[in-house]
Image (tube, rainbow, N blue to C red; front, side):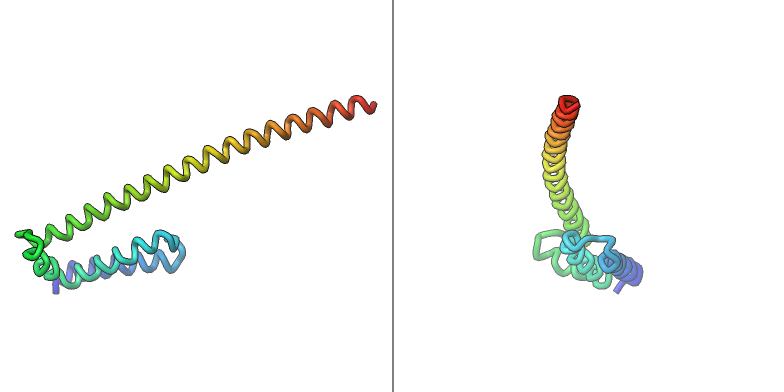
Length: 121
């Protein structure tokens, strides 16, 4: 075991679990980060895992697996974030349109009420 990578892996995993526990990270996102925390801790404590997996995948240098997995994970995460942001933008635009319609309706009702009050006088 390499102490530096082991401590870094455990510290990162503990930080993720701490953020989840303190509700700084919502459950929806925690489902993504819990496996990440576990993998980081395992690779930090047992870096020889990559050396064991590398030959089976035809990779000559084991640590590249961790970098490749991290890069692929980041790309997937960014894609999911963009999808979520697109959904939120669509929802926001629809809410803005509904508010504009409601404000127009309120303005029309206020104008009707004022005209009715003016006629009653």
